[in-house]
Image 1 (cartoon, helix red, strand yellow):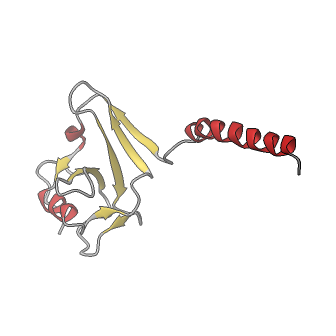
Image 2 (cartoon, one colour; image 1 turned 90 degrees about the vertical axis):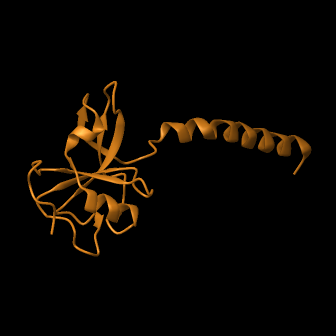
Length: 130
């Protein structure tokens, strides 16, 4: 191989490498599905459950994948994106069977000791899960 051919190969590789970040940025980073968008604060989505929040902080009630379903809160107060777990789905790690099939769980700060679980489908006076 002569020097001219090698030079073309190197220039082509450098050109391709310079385009790589542009190509990677065009690919979406997550495969989430937005099921709710609201201007209300994230904590208005449902009742905060102390027992489930404590279990989440201890890694005993968590989502297996956090990029499936999300709720976006875009208001001036309490703006955030919460991951959602369905009580009847297989996406929740729940070895102690704390969840109910009829409820939806909204995870705030999952995988931290500040994890909070807000429960959709439960009234303020309803009993927490067993």
